[in-house]
Every structure is written in C-alpha cells, then in structure tokens.
Image 1 (cartoon, rainbow, N blue to C red):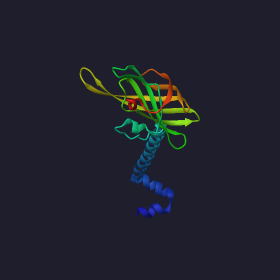
Image 2 (image 1 turned 45 degrees about the vertical axis):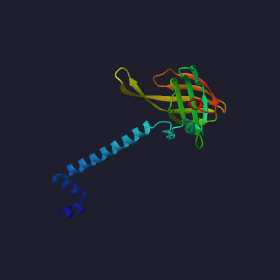
Image 3 (image 1 turned 45 degrees about the horizontal axis):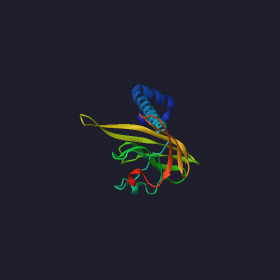
Image 4 (image 1 turned 90 degrees about the vertical axis):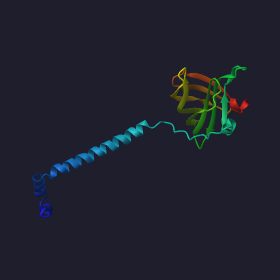
Length: 194
C-alpha cells in the first residue's frame, strides 16, 4: 500500500511521509550525510594546510662507519678543535646529496664540544646556487643528578648559497642562536679524520 502512494503523486508522497514520521528520519539522515561530508572536507583541508613545504627526508642509512654513510655526499665544514687533548670540537658540518632534479637530502653535524655521532636529517631544494633545507632534530638528553631521560625536538632550517667549494648562509636551530656560517668543502666529516 505504501508503494502505491509513493509512485502516484509526489505531493501526496510528501504528505504521506510527514504523516508517518519517515520525514524526520529522512531529514536526520540527510543532516548526518552533510555533517560527515563537512568533517571529511575540513580534515582534508587541514591536512593539506599542515603539510610541510619540504619533503620528509628519506632515511639516510645508519652505518657503523660514519665515513661510509657520507662517502657519496659533498661535505662542507667549519669544525675545529678547541682543546685537542680533551677532544672538544665546535662547529658545523653539512653533508649534501642531490637527488633527481632540485631535491636535496642532507645531514647536519652540530658540534658543541663532543663530536656528534649522528647527523640531523634534513631535506629541501636547490635552485641554481640557492640551497634551502629543513627538518626536525630530536635531541636525547640526560638530566642530572636524577639521570632522567629527556627528549627535545628542535626545528632546523638552513638557507644559503652553495658552490662547489663553499657554503655560505645561515643555520637556524629552534632553541639556539641563529648562526651565520661559512663552510668550506672537505673530503670527509670530522669523525672520519680521527
């Protein structure tokens, strides 16, 4: 009987839906569909807005021998001993690998006294001589005297001019002072010299 009413006259069908309470259910379904669509669109838009301008760097393989890890990369350095007997090293080293086109992966070695065994993975672009890199540095610290492990994340950004023999630019590490650096091309990272 209901099917006969639905197929005859659209106005009659609407009156019939109102009288049976189906309209309220149908309206609720339509509202839910619209709300779900709004949520999906807003999630997609916010995900697009949160995307970094740089690609997430492809992991540069870990290796026991740091020289092997950076052997196929161009290395620029200003690292130096401040006290040779103690082994304290200061400065920066930047190991760069250019991928297809303008994409670049890099390792930044940040020396603050003790040699840094692991580089900070960065990615970015090179356009002509202009190099832009960015990434996150996850620093593992131990708080004394409690020996509590602390993990801090710092955003790192590098911008400057790169030639075959030098890198001149600025290094911004969140939580540290911005450094204007002049790095010269070297054969290998500091740890390989030892």
